[in-house]
Length: 130
Image 1 (spheres, rainbow, N blue to C red):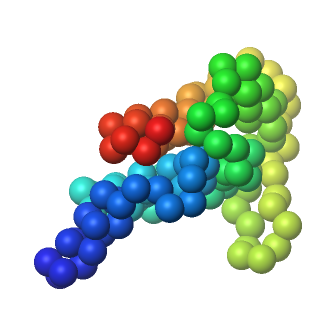
Image 2 (image 1 turned 90 degrees about the vertical axis):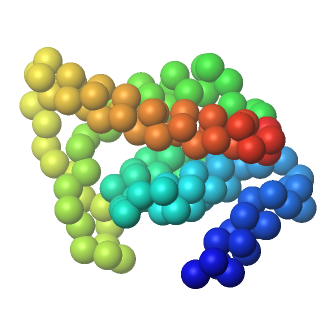
């Protein structure tokens, strides 16, 4: 167990071999950090994989702008809520009636997901990867 932790620490401490850090890599490093600090990071992994990586994963962290993030947030709020879908099948969505409560719920969800992204970016900055 100690050897695994040492290996993880070495991996984190290594300078970036592939150049600038992409959002996807920052998310993965954050998930590794969570898994080392908490019992489970399953919900966070789900949100990173479902919302952050598809939209921003290939974007360089240094290339993120306020406008890009605002547009991403608006798109999440406007998108219908995801429904449970079997692995490998096309993602299903729940129907929404567009009332104020539905929009408020989507805004709350988008804010929680944005908090995860901010935490990943803050960790990348703190670790000197940005």
